Length: 139
Image (tube, rainbow, N blue to C red; front, side):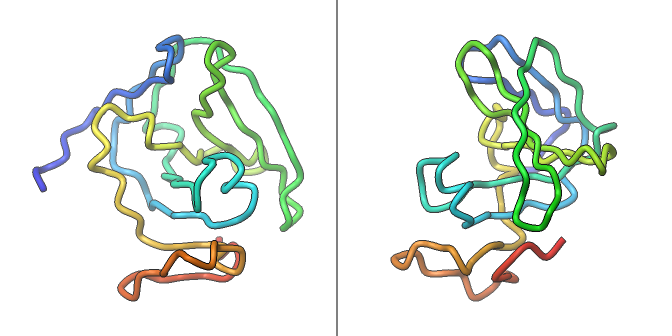
């Protein structure tokens, strides 16, 4: 793998929302909860936790919120044009967002450091043995 250089540009599918990730994510998790399976239409969703000061957005985004199993509010920002989810946030933790890193132009940063909500994972998916795995939300 080559060295990752910041900033990294990102965008939704239609390009109406763009951004720059200015620094490495704090962590990257593969989430296996049923909500993330619905979001990704796959076995899990990838989330990169980043400081809000390390990312700059341009373009209009719409917002959707739901109550998470742990009682926190889980907000989402998405492009109103193509519907592409850009990031999640907890309004009670405004210093961090949970970026959907598959929207990055350079996706080599997507290397999970943990797997979460493995209690809801698809039976056919084998968890890695070299990363921490949590049955629920560890943070």
